[in-house]
Amino acid sequence: MTITDFAGLGLPKELVSSLAKAGFDTPTPIQGKAIPAQLQGRDILGIAQTGSGKTAAFGLPIIAGIFALEGAPAPKSCRALILAPTRELAVQIEEMMRTYATYRRLTTALVLGGVSRQAQVQKLARGVDVLIATPGRLMDLLDDRKVRLDQTRWLVLDEADRMLDMGFIQPVRKIAAAIGPKRQTALFSATMAPEIGKLAASLLNDPVKVEANIQGETVGKIDQQVILSGSKQKRDKLNELLADDSLNRVVVFSRTKHGADKVAKNLGIDGHTVAAIHGNKSQNARQSALRGFRDGRVRILVATDIVARGIDVPEITHVINYELPDDPENYVHRIGRTGRNGASGVAITLVDGTERSKLRDVERLIRRTLPVTGTLPAGSENAEQRGAPARRGRPGNAGGRPANAGGRPGNGGQRAGEGRGRNQSRPPQSGTDKGWWAKLDSEVGKEDGGRGEGKPSKGPKQRWNKRKKEGAQAARAGGGGRPQRRNTSAA
Ligand code: AMP
Image (cartoon, rainbow, N blue to C red; front, side, top):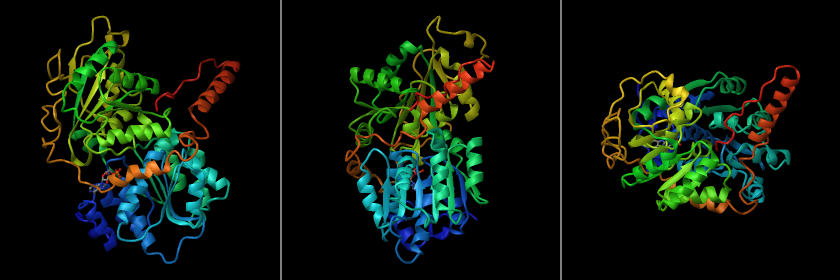
């Protein structure tokens, strides 16, 4: 049986009404599966990313459960704890939870780094229904006994894979241990890497597995194109693409923080409205970049992978990969910034001679050969390419601009899904947009100048030093070898 409305999932009336007000009529596939299971008290292991509707999938059953409770939360405690890897995602989640509970009182608090600790402590003092937190700051408050988790009944780990990437595994385990075993737990991750499997096995009790097939669904709707370009020609190529006004709201992805700054600087010099967002930027700078982009004052947001992944900015018309990511899965996350909520989108990837094997990895992952146009300058073919097998079924003209490189989403010849006009496919107004920025504004800048979160206890530098030490030990023991640096500059 397919359930086509929220009432059919067993949610209380007040929740269904607030969802209708927010423009949510039909549950997304992951909501259809996860909500009834959680209402029955089951743990959830969800493979889903931003765009699948995962926040409502874990949030609605929690709110329904809280509505059914009597009394008030105990001082310093929370009934539900949602852990998120970044401040931006945490703010978004809180805003969504409040939207879902429009017609009944639900108390929420945010605990995140980079903003006033005192205000958070004060808010927690009376106890709250739902606490949304990033792990680093929450650990600080736990250590200082400003918060207690022994009364918490629901735990959500959102974007667990990213929390692990950011070195939050120990805090996450400690926080789960502080809650104790009498809890209902939901773990959401965009990927199912072995470490996630291990974490899930240790924290979840006989979970129901739900998966939003984002790779098949979302990627299928995005018009994906590859343009070959020498690395030195990428700046011109990007300007050529941006000359088309239909590239209305564009995210340009760069592999490294340094690269993102450089691309943003050049775009500024070339006359574009642009902002950059990455892990080296202060919280204030990240916030103002996102706000300008969301408001439409800034046409182009240059981003690295980690920071941009959970951000829900509607109506991004184009994603441009200035460079391919090291990890092909990040390609899927990147292009998923466009084509949201049934809208269409275009993803264009500039590929130079050194990136051919990365392109093949991406194509293997998404199980399709991407249409390629453009040429590499003579002499830029490297050794790696000479050994590369010929590409199969390359459509389009070999040189020059792709047929629809800057084309409006919806009219693309290479589209895998059905052609849908841009205006017909505008995402529904969720009602979550308005307060988002006001919230972040009011939270940010009160204290430590935007530092704090995003500085996990064991950051990339520490991990690098650890690997270096291990490498030196191995070398002393006769193993030799330099430790492998794992993409530490991305984000
Ligand atoms: P999420 O994957 O939770 O980040 O949600 C992505 C976007 O989809 C957010 O803007 C939500 O407000 C929106 N959304 C989630 N569920 C639904 C739904 N059932 N109908 C319409 N929009 C939704």
